Image (cartoon, rainbow, N blue to C red):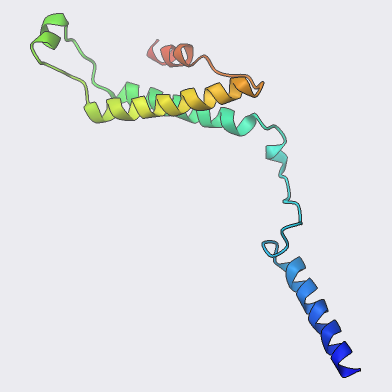
Length: 119
């Protein structure tokens, strides 16, 4: 009779641990927050953040007065580090934007969005 009681106590303790610690009970569904109701919201926010970062970097870039002769002569007013960062941000935004379009979500016209910053 004692071994049966010991087994019952062990099973009860294991159940309490699984209920108390969500990572041990993999069958429990994760709670969905109210902000995750729209599956398009997070990717759209991600693209908006990239657009805003690109706009900020473009606004911080020095205004160039160079012409074709200055460029041919080797004079450059472009910060290569900012150019690489803008290129990477645009690449990320393009990729997520393509996923938005493929998933039936409203995608961005990135060229138009970025032109709005220069006006």
